[in-house]
Length: 146
Image 1: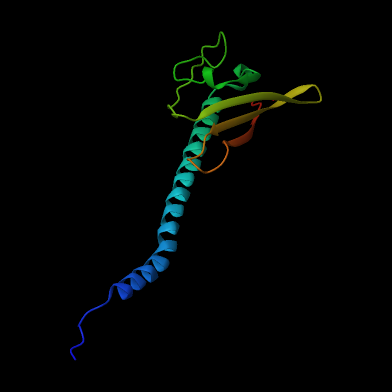
Image 2: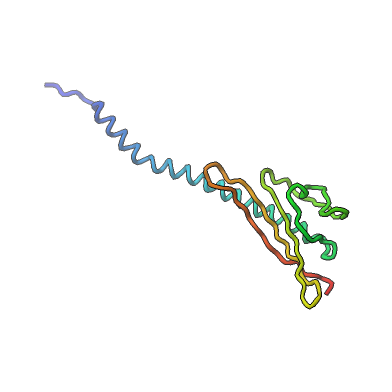
């Protein structure tokens, strides 16, 4: 009797099944790491946008910095920081991110000593990563004339 040389269909199917079981988690892991890298890039982009906006606010003299909330639609390149102000934003486009600045006063002993600057950056995450996210950066701006 001459036995056939080679593999049977059953042996090939079984080997392919074992191969899929071993490679499945690796393929899933690479997809998850790609999604994680996208989130890290979004975070870096949001941090850079927050720092840029904070630097813009710090470039304005303390006495001319307006108190209140500045919404995203007013934070654009070439737009005055407040109505009647000669200080203009010189800021980068941030795509789908949105920004908001809240500026409030801190007084002590009847003197205006600080202005609290709260910069908020909001964005929608990558598909399948959950709800919208935000980054908040809070700094104090000291009155240089005391």
